[in-house]
Image: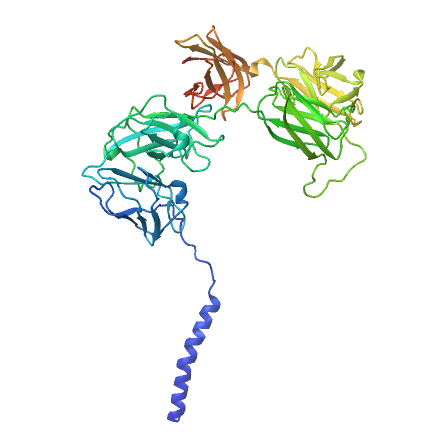
Amino acid sequence: MPKVLHNYVRFTLRILIPSMVAVYVMSCATIVSPTGGPKDITPPKLVYSEPRNLSTNFSGNKLILNFNEYVSLKTPEKYLLISPPLAPLPEIKVKGHSVVIKIEDSLRSNTTYNFYLGNAIVDLTEDNPVRNFNFAFSTGPQIDSLSLSGNVTEAFTRMPVKGALVMLYNDFTDSLPMKQIPTYVSRTNDDGKFMFNSLAAGKYRAVALLDGNNDYKYDLPTELIGFNADSVQPYYIPESQKDTVSSPKDSLKIANPAMLSLNLFPEPDSTQRILKSVMVSKDRLAVFFRYPTKSPSFRVINLPDSLPWSLREWTNNNDTLNAWLLNKPDTLKLEIADRGLVIDTINMSTSMKVVGKPRTTTTETKLKFTNSAMGGKLEYGKPFILTYSNPVKSYIPDSLKLKIIAGKDTSFVKPVVQFTDSIHRHLKINYKWDANSRYDLYLPKGSFTDIYSDICDSTHILFGMRPVDEYGTFSVRINRKDNTYPVIIQLLTDKGAVVDQRIVTTGKDADFGLLPPATYGLKAILDRNANSRWDTGKFLKKIQPETVLIHPKKFEVRTNWELEETWDL
């Protein structure tokens, strides 16, 4: 082979073979997205600062906080509080791993400054916050080193409150929390706990606030507030027991036995209001009031006074109205008053909005109802009740057929039937129910007709009465030193909903009788004004809400079992 040709072949192979190999490898490879590894849940950690945290004799005008990763600021205006206050507020910027705070105001001499940034400092990628970040320094030779810890709960439920402000004032003017920002501030964690560090010695007024507009003032009627009746004094806590500013856990180490407890409550507002009005079905209007009504009245503006506009039914505590419309204009203009005072005028369409695909309509509308035998079981000693969706205009009493089923034998009986309400929605069917029998209640088609001429369909309702031995009993013996006022003992579900209650006055026992097997809790309300309900507090009048106690135990009520408990209040 000529030398020139030989060199050409070598050159071609040198270029061609690597290219073919690369194409082959690329064609066989499966392209996938990088997995990225586990999600980062670790917050930034403070590496160093200028000046150092808790340093003394500071005379500069700039703070530099350097972290171990890139950081950013998330709503610093929500969290930032400086005590003593500075005006104007410092300029805060982020530069890579650092947060730079430039102080515009002149600093006082021999003063400890606390810069509280809460959860504002987060990492750049996942927004993991440095929780309850607090930085302190002194312009004098000593730094304040006292602390104060405690917890915040909601006064009625006694559940811990997350994210509540706890504020300390060295001025005891009653209205100060409504007008000025506090001297010191902290924020509760997920468990409702808080801690102050670097406090000066002295007496303070302590106030907790669920701040609705993030201005560190009690200035909205919807905000919850709590206060301590006496002044509080900070104390010394060893450094080993304090929560560090870079802790990845939202927990506080609280060891002092004199920890402060604050209960948040809503201030009473005596102004009656309509919370909501809505058409809940094609003919039924529901109106929700803020408080139970005393003497309500209604006037339809766009109907003659001579025309009846509805049949009405109230909930047990008179705070919700259900009105079945009789003469229904396309738009209802309804003036609502209570105790002679006009509360509001609602102006709403009476047509229902259809969401999604409309259902196929039929020429015949059915009158629907529910019954009190849930799951085919009538609770022991309770009447059988049919509840109709609309008021009943007429029914045929003799049409109801009640059949007793005992093994293979059946017999028909005639129960006592009567409506228990004025608008005829709740029909009570009385009979001497036997736990050893089964019952078949038959309602023929058309036996009930509502005010809109809708009729019920033919229905068989099979049920039995739950026997006594399927229940347990639960009674509570109440021991207390002060018997001058009643105590409301509430039985709760394991989720906290009220099942039943007893008011204990001169006696000592709260007997809840027969109960279905379940897990229950107990709540006690110290009813000091004897009005049979819980009363909230009043901040300016220094009235605390009525005390609520939650029993620390849960109680398992079992079938055919008598349970007794003693509670020392």
